[in-house]
Image (cartoon, rainbow, N blue to C red; front, top):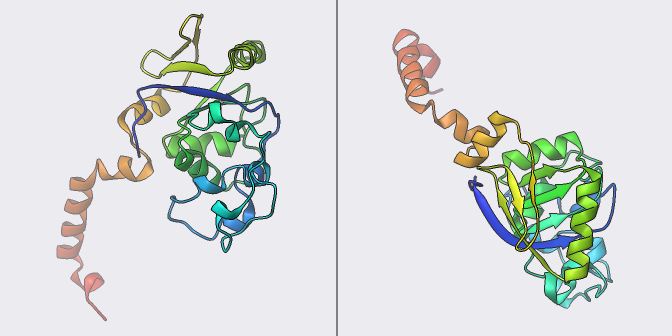
Length: 214
């Protein structure tokens, strides 16, 4: 998993509440478990004017010019700003895979669905919950400026704007440590690789019949 320490990037204001995981990555794209290749289908029903699928080349589809990520000034956005209850709906981890594959490293919203929130930390996407008043202020700046760059510092737990205030945020210490070190569940397990190997060697010596090939 890619570590998250400090990230500077363009903020895309997605002015929608209750964005569910089917909107983030529709069900027809859930046939792969490779974690890559989903970025082209992120917000598929909103980004394109015609229907898509795994057998349809996205290059042949018409983009919706009104969708925020299709606007020229936001195509390279890596921070997503949204309204409350982001990531609700089904528990598909593909939703976070799609965001990460598109290039989104951080999502800022007043609240998140629990499973989506947990999946973000397992895949290197930082979810930041801020109060609704602060989120509203960020939306105002992003819309007026026509493009807002922000610096997200997980070390200091702060969001800073080029000529604006600094906003603090909280992340549970255990999650913060894992994000800073780039450790997902597999990475955490592999920290004990020597102990696991020693246990397996001891078990094989004590009970060799368990390791015989049939």
